[in-house]
View 1 (cartoon, one colour):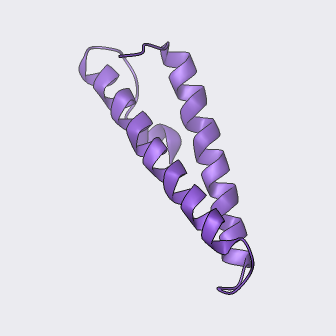
View 2: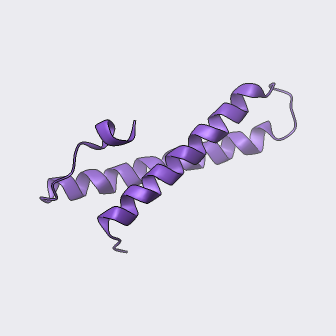
Length: 76
C-alpha cells in the first residue's frame, strides 16, 4: 500500500472535493441533451468514488490514533 502524510491526504481531499463541487455545478447548469453531459457525469462519479476512498483512509488514520477531527466535520 502507498503511504502519504496526513497533510497531503487533507489537501488531496480538499482538492478532489473542490473539483467535484465544480463539476456538480457545471452539470446543474447543463441540459440533459447538452454535449459533454455524459462525460462530465462519469468524471463526477469517479471523483465521488475517489473522495469516498480518501475519506476511508482519513477515517482509518483517526482510528489508528491520529488526533484528527471527524472527516464529516472537516470537509463537508
